[in-house]
Image (cartoon, rainbow, N blue to C red; front, side, top):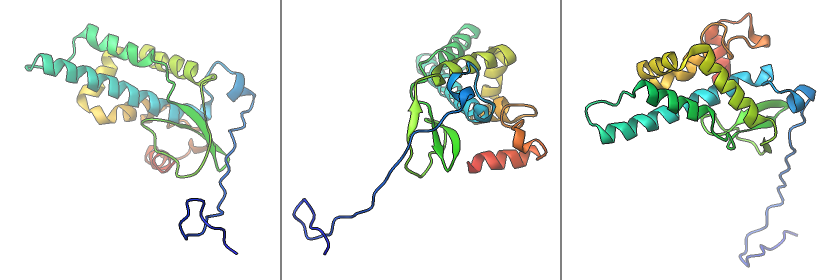
Length: 187
């Protein structure tokens, strides 16, 4: 016999149960100071999203103060990019869905399943370190110029061009960059 609702209405109580477990990390994922290779594409996309957000916010503040130009000065974009890398990264973590570990947080597509996201631990320091490595590898000026050229395509520049984090995934090395992009957008 169906149970009555505890709220006193006549509808039956659903007996659907949900369960979720935290991701199980291997030694590299748990203890390495570096971002594991299989999470670098997601991490790169997270970093590009945050750089874009910080630059957009800085330009919008500047454009409201000085209507003639939204272009940031060199010191402004350098500070903005440095601040984007030096943030706490507390809104990001790793979740495991269907046996696959992925980053989760703002700027990434949400998984439509119940799962546990592990934040904190080594992830903020790894994002910090990887973000600063992009500043060193590409330079603030080049990153800002790419952002100015195509703001929504900063992730494409940082992550998807040849031999970047999302194109050198070990299991997709033989695939074309367009197929890799398609695979990443599906995930």
